[in-house]
Every structure is written in structure tokens, then in C-alpha cells.
Image (cartoon, rainbow, N blue to C red; front, side, top):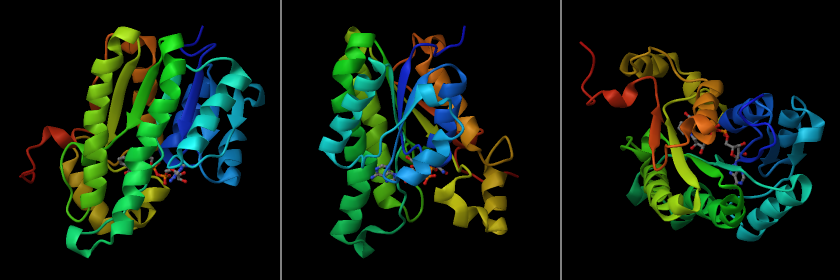
Length: 253
Ligand SMILES: NC(=O)c1ccc[n+]([C@@H]2O[C@H](COP(=O)([O-])OP(=O)(O)OC[C@H]3O[C@@H](n4cnc5c(N)ncnc54)[C@H](O)[C@@H]3O)[C@@H](O)[C@H]2O)c1
């Protein structure tokens, strides 16, 4: 008996990084997994490692409500139910406020925040039927600020508090809503940073466990929050950060 036997999970941004790792983790624990993102080829690559009878590839742009509604409908049509939504798709542009265009702001808000809202709005009627759960992929950047990442900080900060608010609003319906807040994780999003050894050394210095995260580290925490092991956990923004946020920000001595 595995934790997600008979359960159906949607993972957004499943073509790479944390989303791909999360899809693999849920599939390994028995779930049927619906993979979504904008690029079919990337999703097919993730799907190649999963059992074909428990996997559906359905491309969608999370910033488009109609596409997200069609995604949920496709998941239920194929597998008959929905138990878990992982709102993982995201972008992380840099920039200071006075240098940003309105389009820069709208782009990150439409994917990182509207995308979460659309996913939850579309999935909640199904999740209330199954007493399922939502896991949002926020960030340590949604708990505190970074230098030069104001729009990302604003979007992830909103996801952090949306998570708490929805936990209150849907607890009586049996739906739990939690978020993970990863620190720097080795994915496509951080490829350039990872290549900068001096920069990574500075990150490592501030992380108690002394290393950056791998996608599977984050996937394991997502699976825990979605599982019955976390049945009395809701409204939590769980740092999955090797101890980074345990620090008050002063450098190690
Ligand atoms: N990598 C890190 O250091 C880190 C740290 C904290 C939080 N996060 C968050 O983790 C999540 C996953 O990022 P990742 O690091 O795995 O990067 P990634 O780039 O590998 O994955 C993000 C995925 O989202 C998809 N995506 C982007 N816009 C989309 C849209 N409009 N519709 C559908 N899919 C879209 C991308 O194609 C990509 O496959 C993001 O929300 C990110 O903000 C990442």
C-alpha cells in the first residue's frame, strides 16, 4: 500500500525542475499524475519516466483561466477525480521597481499569482468532493525579501498569504491548503546562478545544512504535505531551505 494509491494529482510546471521531480515522486508513490506546462515536448520528457496508464500530459498556460479550467476537466474526465493540486509553475525575473516596465510586473503576477488563483478556483469544486489538498510552491522569497527581485517577492508573498487565507476558508470543507518555501534549488530557473561558483559559495555559507537544494528535496516535502501523514496540517508555509530562514540574516562567524 502506497500513500497515493488511487489518488489523482495535477502538477503545474511539470516539464522541468521541482515540478518534474514532484510528478516522479507522486507517481512512485502510486498516484495518477496530470502533467501540465506550456511546452508539450518538455512534459513528454517527464512523462517518459512515469507509468503510461497513470499519466496524462495536458499542456496549459497557467496564466489563462480557460486553459486551467480545461486542464481540471481533462484530469477528471481521464481519471474520474482530483485529490491534489500542486501549483508549481513559476518564473523569477529580477529587477528594481523604478526600472521595471508595467509588462514586467504583469508577467510575473499573471504566472506566479494569477496562475495559483486560477488553479485553485478551477480545482476547488473537485477537491471539496474528495476532501483533497492544495500545495502551492511559494519560496523563501515569499517569506522575506531578496535584493533585486521585487516583483517576485511581491508575487510569492501574496501566494504565502493566499495559502493561509484559503486554509481558513476551506478547512470545514475538508480541503487542506499548504505551501512549501524552497531556498535556492538546482533547476532550469537557477542554471546561470549555479554556474557562478563564488555566488553559490555565498549561498552555502548561509544555509545551515551547507548545500543548495535538489528538486527531490522539495518534492519530498510536497508529497508529505499532500499525504495523510499531514492530515492535521493546513495553512502552513513550510520552509524547505536547509535552515536558511532559521538565521536572522547576520553572517556566520
Ligand atoms: N529553483 C529555485 O531556486 C526555487 C526556489 C524557490 C521557489 N521556486 C519556485 O519553484 C517553482 C518551480 O520552479 P523551478 O525552480 O523548478 O524552475 P523551472 O524553470 O525548472 O520550472 C518552472 C516550470 O514552470 C513552467 N512555466 C512557466 N510559466 C508557465 C506558465 N505560464 N504556464 C505553465 N507553466 C509555466 C516552466 O516552463 C517550467 O517548466 C516556481 O514557482 C519557482 O518560483 C524555485
